[in-house]
Length: 153
Length: 153
DNA sequence: CTTAAAAATGTATAAATTTGCATCCGAAAT
DNA sequence: ATTTCGGATGCAAATTTATACATTTTTAAG
Image (cartoon, rainbow over all chains, first blue to last red; front, top):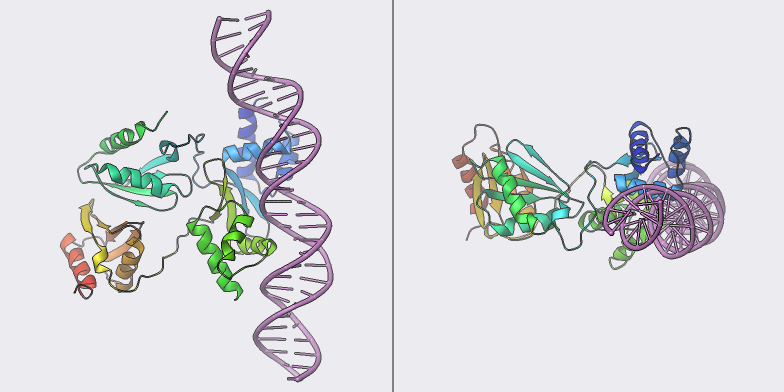
């Protein structure tokens, strides 16, 4: 039994069940032959981006983070790692970041003054990037590569 | 001081700051004259649907449930001067403002309820204005002229 | 195969959050 | 003004989660 198997099991259990505590999850794992301690579970949940929210009926429930992407390990001083995902939609690029990081990343993009990028709008953990007319998605992605590659170790 | 005030303060603080524990939030509340105990905070957070997630850097952060954003406080006085530029792209209008002014300007636009404008999204220094289908760029620009001309001395 | 370094895990403990219970406070009714 | 009722709150205990530390396991390099 390896860690990947355990993480997969945990994600599956959390996705398919209403689980209110780590102890409950542990019990659920017992039958499967893939067990661990509560401490390990705590660490696993963080790695999976699974946090405890509310079940809407007065109780708690573990939930997969809405962002869906799990952030890579942080590299201090780097903003490149603050991009956790990108999605194209209607000619616009949605950039995901960890909570609170959107502004910092957007500012970095804005400062380059790249012509291809008409502008950005940053929320808390999402940036909307609007390309100029007649600029391809590929060109924009290349811009981002250029902007952030020096930050990537 | 009543509960509604406290809840509003808590939501505002959580929305605008990276808060990792209830104790931290308590300390932040101290200066405001609206205080309570950590136990009450725990109950308040549940009521507001605010739960603890991850900040993407190895720490924790309290988060509002499903990305509900809240309009910022309107800035009294002239907002016309707060528009530093506009750019059309992909049928959308990007409005630039000085840092921090986007919300105030966007609110002013929204309040007019102009039919031609489907909606706006404000970041910190940029507003994305989405025109309704089949509305010309010129019509939108005229709307803005109308909205802001009274502010222009 | 052996060794060194890194990663993973469990144990024990600390830290953080939740909750039971008693009390307090304010609104409505008498 | 007094009583009554229900929500709100603080306190302290219980519960739940996170982490420091030691140990084991895995990985990588000779």
